[in-house]
Image (spheres, rainbow, N blue to C red):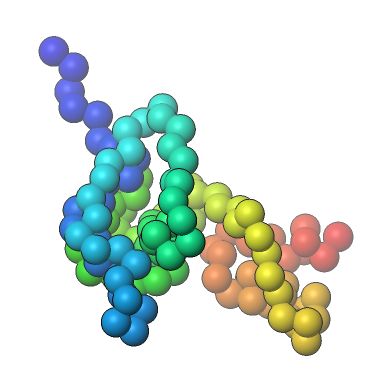
Length: 118
């Protein structure tokens, strides 16, 4: 008999509210290895919040494991194995390229500044 395969993402009872409006309200799901999953729903349904939680970019309540790691406490290790590209990148008009590079260098542990500057 095969051993149980750990889910790539396992979420139990995720909760996140902005002011008094819930974005995630007791949300649970599992993504098994080899699956392609799309998050579909209207604006405000919690799609972006769920992605931010999986990447350790927002606080949340509940249990969440991504690649066996807790994104709240193991974000640096997680980012060695995860890549996320947003469908829309909105940068402030005042942000200079050097400042954007400094920001990315500060949040992504595998960022290669020399390669970026080349």
